[in-house]
Length: 142
Image (cartoon, rainbow, N blue to C red; front, top):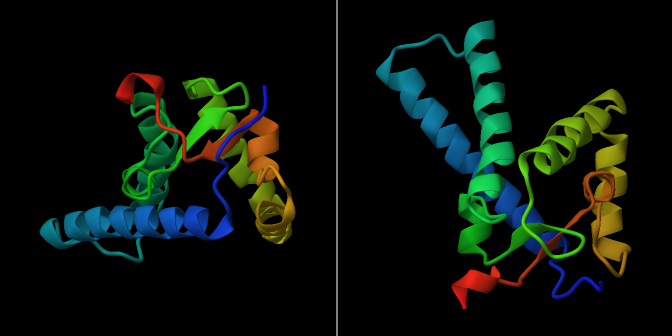
């Protein structure tokens, strides 16, 4: 199946930044309300866990959308156009993030170029998980 209406670099970057701001505001509010020490390992680990859960679970339950992706009308789908599942999102976000980390960000830079230059706009984490990002809406939303 041919991938359709693929989303490019800038809209994907914008969605990731907006989602990051949203997560930061939620965590920041909790830190403020509970007077937590932001330099503590527990707070930093908690923020990482919240972000990982957000990026894995939101697309599973919201047909490939996160909050920012919904605002920008893009979503993650499997290569065949079907909705992503939990395993797919774990590979995409957790394993992909691990690869970016162990390469000290070099693979992330390569991925940015891949999204900018490849015709299918797929990055390393998309190739690993068999996904792509599209402007197409879920079928039931028509």
